[in-house]
Length: 318
Image 1: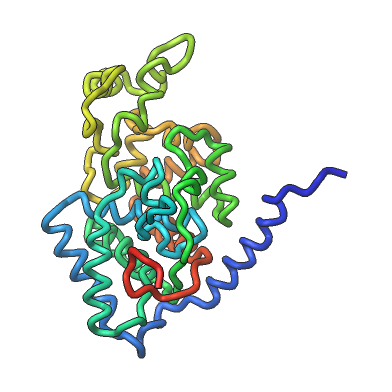
Image 2: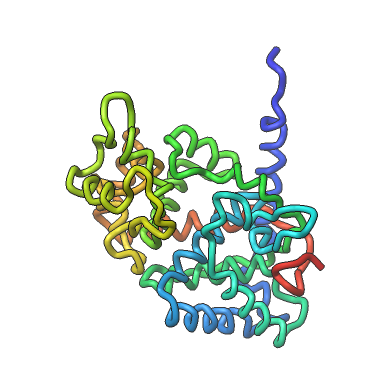
C-alpha cells in the first residue's frame, strides 16, 4: 500500500476549513457593527486610483497572493521583522505595491469602528472595488475573515508561477479547492497590470533547443518584446502591459490569448487542452460570460480559510 503523503492528509482538512469558513462568511457581517465600512473603503480605493492607474492591478494581485498562502488572512500585509522575512519580501511578492491603500482604509475604518473590521476583509473589498472601478463587475463580498499571525517569505514558493504549465497550475488551484474552470476565470485578472521582463523571458530567449522564441507567439509581437526585453536586460522597470487595455477590466486578455499576444507561459497553457481552450473562446466572445464566471470564482477563492484575530495595524500582529 502506498504511503499517504502529507498533502493527501492536508487536503481534506483544507477543504473542510474552506467549507466551514464559506458558511461563516456573510455579505451582511458588518451591517450592525460597522455599517459605513464598505463605502469608506471604496472611497479610499477610488481616490488612490485617481492618483495612480496602477492601483487596481496591484490590489487584485495582492488579494490573489494573500489567498493562495494560508487562505485570505491578510498575511501578505505583514511587515518583516528582524527575526524573519514576511511574505511581502518573498521573491514573487517583491513587485507588489499599493500597500498604503490598505493602510489608509484601515485607519479610516478604525476611526469609525475600532477593532471590528479585519485587514483581510479590507483587502477583499478593495480588490472588488479595484475591479468595479476599472469597468468590471461589482458584487457582494462575503465578510467575516480574520487576520493571520504567520507570514513567511519562504511560503511564497507555493504561489503559481508565470512559467507554470497547465498540470502545475491545476495542481496549485486544486490544492485550494479551486477547479479548472476557476483557473480560467481567475486568469482573466491578467486583463489588468504590467509584466516585468523576468516573468516572460523564458518565452522570448532560448525557448528550447530548436527555437529562441515560443512559436505560439504572434511573430511581430514577439519581436517587439525582444526589443523591450533584450537577453541581458539591465532596465529594472522594463516590461509590457498584460493586454492592450491594461487599466480596463474587460475580456481583451482572452482575445489576446487567441491572437498569440498573451504574455506568460501560464496564460498560453490555457490553450493546451480542449476544456480550457473552449472556456477561453467563450470568454473572448462574451464579456458577460467572463464577468459572471469571474465573480463566482472570486467569491470562491476569497472565501478560503483565514486567520484568528482582527489586527489594529495591518502591518503588525496584535
